[in-house]
Length: 115
Image (tube, rainbow, N blue to C red; front, top):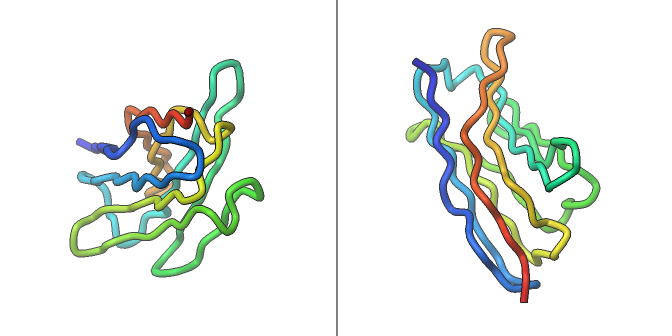
């Protein structure tokens, strides 16, 4: 059974930082493309960052230079370090895995940026 379990969300002030974690099980993590998506109320889910292999990454323009995606093969985990957070980053963040052509999703973790 595939599980993607996110953690690390919460309430943070503008300019602050958060680190999201996603623990993956039940997939071939070594060959999976991993990503983070987000969805704000009334908006479509959008790609935030993706990592393929050890270090091939891409980011949404809105988060470039502020967010960093990384993965730990020993822990089957992927992370999203978010710095200089803005109110417009407020959303539910979802971990995504693409493994053997199949998309998998976590349950989401809420990030709220507000003073």
